[in-house]
Image 1 (cartoon, helix red, strand yellow):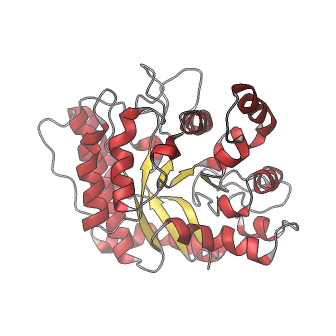
Image 2 (tube, rainbow, N blue to C red):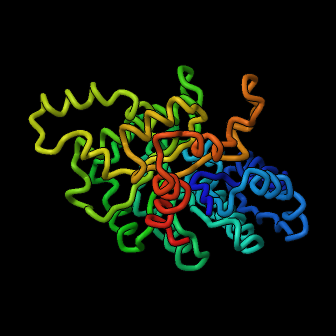
Image 3 (spheres, helix red, strand yellow):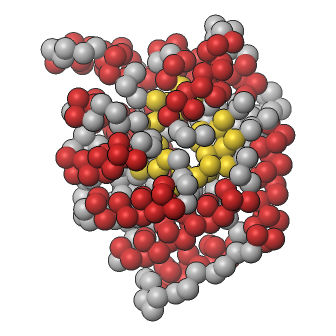
Length: 326
């Protein structure tokens, strides 16, 4: 079985019209979200579903598109209204395609708001909608500031406690970016890198040994600069090696480069890497050299000759099953 651990929802235009009205009104007066019929949803989802079948994906984990979560928008009620609506639409798609999709929830995060404010929506998505994971934005300011708390800070502890209680993993994935220096795509890489170092430097797994963490986009920059951080840990006098600390985390293959994926699988190992493509999404572009779509990563993983059949099974299916209830 091929499990794509990094997928994002595709929504019909009526949903984004509602988002625009929310932004214009700032949620007051309170707007009633549009009902999307199964017939309309099926029509809109047809290309997404066909694409997954063409590339051989059996199950895809669906989460909200990160650049559209609007975490920096005020007031916070706008974020709550949009987040719960998108989570409901993901649940609808999972109900319509029960063999193909599993839900991964967004959280209604807002800068300066206690993270406990997100817990009711998290519980609703897991207990009522049947979601199997959560998408966490490490920078709800979306690059606007003030600087958010690192993921090793006690600010996040109430969320971690709830995730352990519910036994679901979090996918660390930043959102849009207001900075003039960073596109949101670059921000994804920056925040993934910062998240890893904050979790490791603060020894978060000593406090939460059962916390399940997946870092998006193959770990940002960190797996490709292992030597530098190995040296950093040695100079700190840390008891645990940097490599051991990294293997408390999980990573996915959503970076569209065979060379990078080979390095990731060498330095992290196939026990901690999940297949992920974000297909359809950013990588849905034709490679001018190979003529293949860049997010068609199944053949890329299959062509890595140092991976055994057992290793490939872990990447394609086993590791996802170890973390998610699939």
